[in-house]
Length: 450
Ligand code: P5A
Image (cartoon, rainbow, N blue to C red; front, side, top):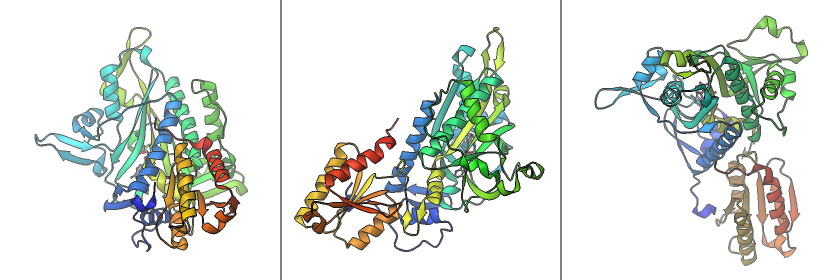
């Protein structure tokens, strides 16, 4: 993409309505525009990162054996009357009527819809286990939408639903989700810690929230410091292996880690004092096992091995896809702007031409641009007739992890400059070497649409 042809409405001034850094930077970098309280337009740069995050989520779900599909955002209230949640859900649910006076609602979550699809089409235990999921817009009429995409009213969620014959199978599905979530967040450069939580209106006893530690987080959390040493890393996992998934769950949940909803001071005090941490966190996901709560209420049964109809065991599992943009920025920025991890950066590399109109500089930038696009990498080429300082400030603000600076002086010696956004370090090298280096850096981070 050439910046002169792109739509990147960056703001010079700090927007006064933004209280936290991620919200401020998303507005300044021209990623989002507020349309109503908690409702945003996703401008091209924000939309690009949203898609990158979404694709990582898809890849990791599919790797775990879960099946993507798409549900409508508008639902009939009747399904929610069947489950008994229509009256109880309260004012967070946006309710409306169609022209025939039928009660409708904008989906705040989709347990009922997925259970309905399941009961319509699955009849035998032989079709289990089954986990279906979608990534779709949700609406919750939050009383206090704030912090930009962190607590929106309209927000983008990955929501998955497992259907299993037995409680044991459903708990394996729970563990599988926990493992896939650990992998997902790490690919985005985040450490998200599973913590025991409260199940709220979704229901059930087994639930973990995934929290990214951040001062601006909305949840108060209590944990054993040792848990922050854990990473999933590059290990291979067989998602069909009950033992392997269970072992990961135990490794990541055996130490004390709870949100304030389930915090137990006496248990916490058993952790050695120097390891006891009280901090704040951003909830980027939550997994639930709730047994037969929905299958019983809605008659979702399969024929079991003994020939008798039996209610399926279920759970649901969510990732806050749009919230993740805010969480990543909270975790990765400096005074000059965003610092995208390679896994989610909107463009792989910025090309800054120090002297637009100089024949040699223009030609070198074009050549770099073509080399990247030829191998499927996306450069953002600042080809505007602007001062170098302004170009650097824009690149720093929008946070591309790598920048190549091209100027007539360097080119006389056959070199360009490759700069890391994270460390600020610059190294001179030939344009060919710079291309090779960027290709090498991104080799583990190629994200294809699923
Ligand atoms: C699990 C999937 C559920 O709704 N039903 C389907 C279950 N879980 S949840 O914890 O309530 O939501 C899942 C994740 O969505 C994000 N989230 C939000 N993001 C932005 N703005 C909001 N108002 C908002 N509410 C929830 C969170 O990341 C949450 O973990």
